Length: 211
Image (tube, rainbow, N blue to C red; front, side):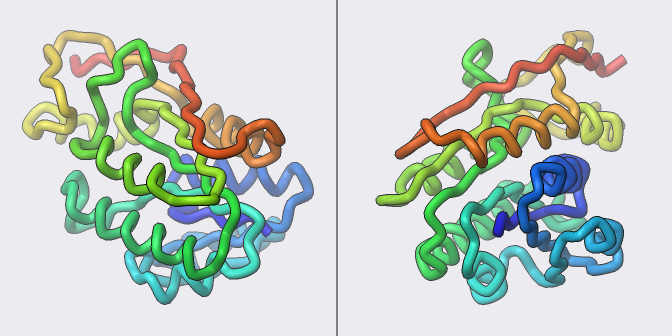
């Protein structure tokens, strides 16, 4: 059983599709069962609940071979660091209680070519909380900015600081698509050589500019 949190979002839903295509049993979580219904029709088990609730996540993670942690925010808190820490704190405790042996985290920190930036400030601390887990295989996928998210939230990027480093509004930013992320996570779940704590970079080949 592979558990995928935040499966209603673009990266999460694409990850679920790719993992299902590998004939894996999949359990998806999200705040809305209706938003996940189509994944249920493809064969995934759907669990509706609050992904910042440790009790809910412990139930979701129980019996899992691996957990794909795509840390969702909340609509009213989108872009706030605290909601991501709350979600990861709950997930870390749920992993311990459920005795899950492998976690794949989608981090929004940039790959090594630009390591000082992140799409969400404070993501370095989020990575650290997962890396502190003992006797668990932890894979942190650094994919940077997600193209679909940037297109959806492009108006907000003009007025709010969404990165740990300020960028010129005229600068181009490397993007990855949700499909690229989903395919990579599905590959990482099955990678037998990723033991202990690993960092994997996914460099985007697409480009986005504010204007």
